[in-house]
Image 1: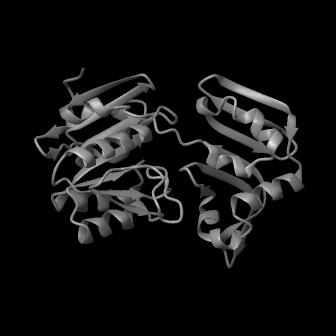
Image 2: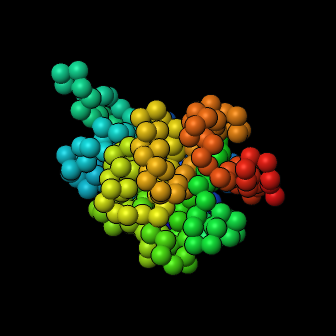
Amino acid sequence: MESLKKYFRREVWERLERDMYDTMEIRIRVNQPMLVKGIFGEKIYPDFCFDAQAMEELFERITNYSMYAYEKELKEGYLTLSGGHRVGLAGEAVYMDGKLQGMKHIRFMNFRICHNIAGYGKELVPKIADGDRIKNTLIISRPGMGKTTMLRNLISEISHNLKGTSISVIDERNEISGSYLGVPQIDLGSRTDILSGVSKKDGIIMATRALGPAVIAVDEIGEEQDKAALQYALNSGVRLLATIHGDCMGQVQNRLGGSLYHQFDCFVLIERRDKYQCIFGKSESF
């Protein structure tokens, strides 16, 4: 967590670091008290309000005083920080010829803290592996329930331990690997290749054609433009390890469509951070 220290004033960091290992989000809004969410619930810090100048200074620090080096990320509304943390941004949108160019006057920030919970979900590996071949596996949960953490740990466990199983990670928003300046901040294993900052559609096709993966891992599927690429990978003999937002199996089937949905062999349904079930063939569970 020390990688975050450089972005905050000393007196702010001294308060934050007391709960940092249990913190999930730090929300900073112009002229409003800082708000922190975590395992402990929600805490408001009325002593720390950021005016417009303080927001500008914080933004300069997280962009290393060169916002133009982050134009692509600003169009997407987030930046990836060292340590694998991510900060969502909101402010005034900038358009040119009807196309979004980025943002200015950043006045709202949401720091999402990267917690790599060692071992979370690793006991699933023997269940989703058929010898040295991974079953097509889909992790399902509501936001904030730990599906990306589980995906990350499964990738690492498979990559370190299943010989001959090359994994291509499509890390569109650097949330899986936490890549910073192209270097993963989280160990995803010795048999893993990472395509970061690329759209899921383009990354899946690139990996399938160029990297020869046994498995493609991707976070938060379900968009219409991704489905053809996912099917392309499946038709090429690549196995999928993916996550999706959802509350139940029926909702996920509606989002993916029956054809793609029924090609998954295993579904991991996370009900809360400490409770999940694995469903095979849409019936067997534990």
